[in-house]
Image 1: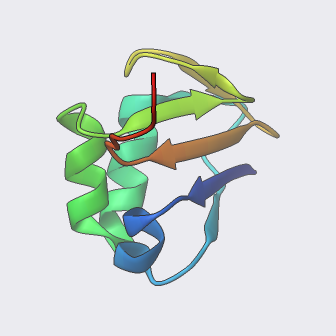
Image 2 (image 1 turned 30 degrees about the horizontal axis):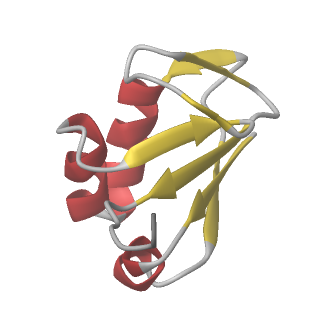
Length: 84
């Protein structure tokens, strides 16, 4: 089972803080985005179009990254601000 955590505006779009997906022992971010798209089409599309930052076990990854059963995926929308 892969746990997906939604942050900021993605949490509002999904209508929940997290989801769980059973995609076998191994999958990719791209395939996970297709599963997410079944319940939240806009978020799935944003992941595929690289409009959100994806981290797996707190490491930022690319769409072809491999995800394993038991991993935690965080989806973070674009953000700005802060001070230098």
